[in-house]
Amino acid sequence: MRLCRYLDATLGEDRLGLVQGQEILDVTPALDAIPAQRWPLAQGDPLITHLEAVTVRIRTLAAAAPRRPLAGAKLKSPVANPSKIINAPINYAAHIDEAKKDQGIAHGRDIKNIWDWGLFLKANSALIGPGEEIRLRMPDRRNDHEVELAVIIGKPCNKVAKADALAYVAGYAIGLDMTIRGPELPSFRKSVDTYAVCGPWLTTADEVGDPGNLRLFITVNGEMRQDASTARMVYDVPKLIEYASSMYTLLPGDLIFTGTPEGVGPVKPGDVLHAEIEKVG
Ligand code: MN
Image (cartoon, rainbow, N blue to C red; front, side):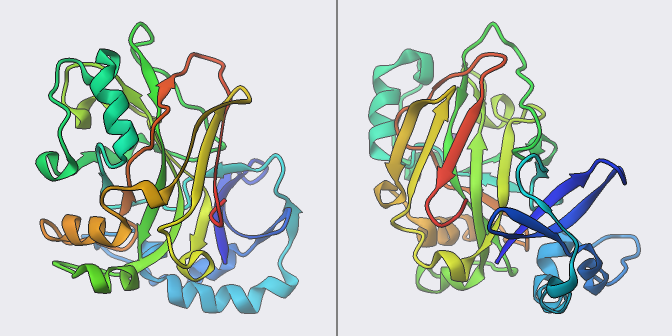
């Protein structure tokens, strides 16, 4: 199942969509399966927390749901309210190699290994979808694209073992970890508004199967920039879930951007980025 969030410009509100082929089925009434909440709100994304109940409603609504073309839809992040956006730095060997060679990436840092650096967080307020625009901050600096497989956590988990980790995944999306290069901490440089792109939709884990051998690529203005496979990750998806949850509880809707392969490079205002991940979107 492929679930998207899109803006209905006429209504001026976000809708929940089921993507089928080149169409979006408006299944917004399925959100009624999410119980009303009172303050203080539970942490975690309400849609992902109640995804099973929402999915049951979607199946009954789908046949009669209004349809619209996928083309031209203003897609937003399928997860609206993650409790955190977790990021793996230097998680592909060939990207580590290019970072060591290029001071435009390294900025004097000693590029080591993921187990030396740990993980970092991007601000939730940076989150947008592919139907929205990245707005460059500090355009005098190098601003890079980093295409990454994004894992969407489905159930709370803490100190989960690698062997059990995939049972906690709701689905996958494409993540763009947009980055201002420079000497500051990554959580600062990578948390600019619009610098965490997630989309085009949530593809449920059952449709993807093994996340460990998926082609991912990104073009800028039609030119191929990054083209690799998730098989080249240093820490694979189960290991990243084990590693992250060894330090903090993962909640439904939490996003893990799993690191970028080689080929990162600068973007400038007006560029068009096109990313794909096999089986995901
Ligand atoms: Mn990254």
